[in-house]
Image (cartoon, rainbow, N blue to C red; front, side, top):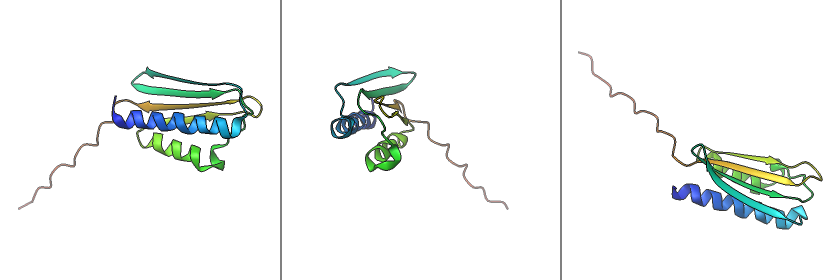
Length: 108
């Protein structure tokens, strides 16, 4: 697995668990990770107060940007009173680079 994918998964779990401790007032939290369809799927869920809003803090926005930089997605489901589920899907193989432009030719 590419180092960048592993590092991003680590940061997702670390930030999500920090948010559980700081904000969720949860009794339990769980982390799951699995390879699925060419991507690493990382999920952190808790049974806390819910109501997480990615637009209200830099932590979740930073995670979304970090995951997106690798071509992945980050979703947050967090209804008030129903806990939070954060899911990151990070492609394991890098997307194919764009083809190089054809060399210019000189016309005579």
